[in-house]
Image 1 (spheres, rainbow, N blue to C red):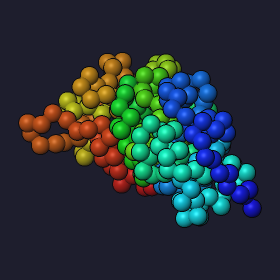
Image 2: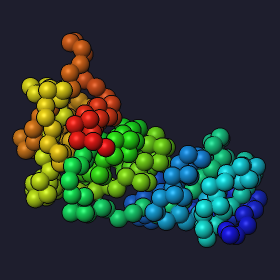
Image 3: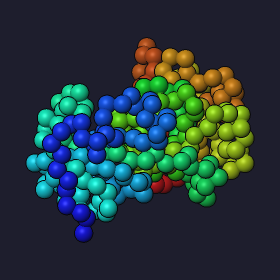
Length: 264
């Protein structure tokens, strides 16, 4: 049985210092810790393989969260709503925070044999888009998500929230050298496709390779020329006169198309 909840009455109690309003960039970069919020994300976190360091819950909610019985020896702190609001700097209406350890980058070589789909995020700075792509990756059973060094970290609180916890369960492959990454894909017989609204080849008329990587660039500039040249360009057909789709929406369409051809 887990230990009883630990009551907290003061927002400055050192036992909950982990949750204080430190800049996420500093915490993620130097400490390797992420902060998640909300019941849905807590469910995902506690049932994942990630290490949960601590949980902080509004005192009236703890008894209504049966998933807390699965926390093992992770400390559970309970506090009045005012304490949580003071920590967050705003009204934390979800009343639930959890701190976990960011996992190491998943090795590309550990991807499974057989058919697979791999979204590859390049220079995506918007946390909503990153979270949305991870949510799509989980829904369509992507083997992992690959991100370059310029993409927003999927373990930022907003990305986790928008992704409904998907960044906590979908493996993340991190890379900094595009050429080396493309060579590694080739070694693993993974075919790269570049999503581009100006591509001459429509997605819906394409027989996709069983092992496929889908390169997704930032809206506006799109993908770098180096990546476009190394991949098969694909376009998602949309109504004439409109520029493009949101990148997270595009990821869902192309992942669904691959799953329809090769199964979940």
